[in-house]
Length: 553
Ligand SMILES: [Zn+2]
Picture 1 (tube, protein in one colour):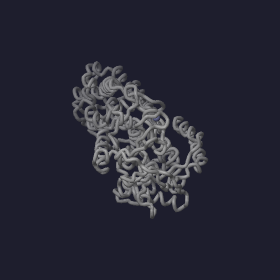
Picture 2 (cartoon, protein in one colour; picture 1 turned 90 degrees about the horizontal axis):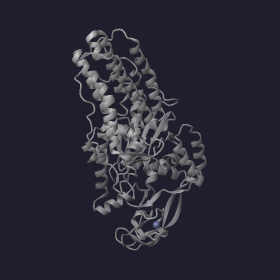
Picture 3 (cartoon, protein in one colour; picture 1 turned 180 degrees about the vertical axis):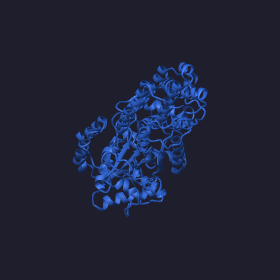
Picture 4 (tube, helix red, strand yellow; picture 1 turned 135 degrees about the horizontal axis):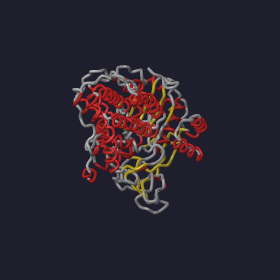
């Protein structure tokens, strides 16, 4: 296997989607698509790579949704887990495993992790006052409490925030607190919470992040902001039923708080992956050897969890690798304002992935990816990218090459003959294109990678126009054959170079070329791999035009 710098293998994760709703395109732009493009590139480049993700299924919002809808938590998470998983498959996200934190392996792994820190006496206990409903016989976690905001007087504030003035709150601050479910007025009772000493890790974290010269400035700046404020110790347990139980005798009724438990999902899901492959110990190679490159993809709202909390947990535990990079994206807004599941202002992936070519959706998002600043998704952009770029540039080149070959060369790769200067120029340009595009992927510059790949297709179209095969065929069929041979070789190159962003199209091109994946790797992308006389399949249209009426809907 190929080495990546000092590393022998790559472990890619995408932020675990929370299972209280359907995935929207903002999530796709924030973490899933960049992670998938990177993973696909890494496979083509010949790295030993695995790509891990799954549903994050515990916590108060799901517990609350279940009670509100009068169904079990299991029904809620099943509904969204399977629907999201299906939509990801339809979008071509190539996870090696997409699992869920409600699985047994995850509970065991999270409990082991908790106990490891507890046994090393790294955690401490603190008695705190918490609201307790005697009617419901339970402590009321943040979102289970409503009351009046002490800051603005809004009467419907919840125990974690005031929707009216945006203040972050704790349940004890609310005036006239009531149970959200029963309206019962809670009493104050003592409860013991377990704390993770995050403060103690600040110096170590700062040093670690200072050593990361290749991290995106947005990520480093977020972290520096928190360091400046000073990290605070964090409670890692909750009085709640829906979660991974705290594995300590006498603490029944407490669960591990999700910010601590969920990221351990990356580890537990890797365990599951290799258990399924019949190699139950192999996950350790990925998590416990220093020559693994761990790359966590996520949106900016998750930076604190992946660049601060989780690394601090891993440092405290000591057995696991830390991230080599955390290439977080900013947000992709929808037609000018932030996408939000709760406000209903979002394009749900499941609703669009069947209506449009999934590759067109991937391309529209990737070419406008919020890598360094927020961007906007506009429906007319999807149409424009599909019609003016995918169809008019890539689709056009592949189509006219195949149609020409079928018409004049019986659908067989014509003899390559002797290359003229114009042929050699484009062939020789491939190597530097391929290297440049690879370097963009290696450095998480997906927009640039895509832009450069499209530039090569523009060159190919120019080559087709300049060599004028439609004229030459009448005068010099052999010369025309050389041109079409070069164009077909370029189609194979495109199948490889576009796979990270257009995986379905890539397979279509391979099918049209009637080749398998024998030369389907990055190091073959600059080579002429098709043999003279090789029989092709009939051309098909790669991208149909998106009409105005479809976009208006
Ligand atoms: Zn308020």
